[in-house]
Length: 132
Image (cartoon, one colour):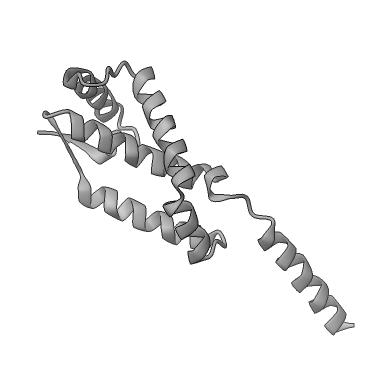
């Protein structure tokens, strides 16, 4: 009887592990990667704002650890991280966020304006930025 219960538990656990959603559907992972990308775009295009690069690096490392804690393998994490389709999707989401925030491509002041708003809000994006 004990062996049957253990087999049932193991089969249920295995079914749960294989039913995990793709990383792009895990908001804390995908949303944080998006925030890092937005902050990077702001700091790259605004001369008045710098990135908190060490914090961004630690954030990305902690995401990998969190994904592992959620049951994702290194191969699954690397496939998400290196996927050209995912990079393109995230770039599109980043660009849409920037446009919504009033950014006009090639106009540094608009990137600076959004960066200042994010810093003042204390948002996830703003936490990765600092005024020069």
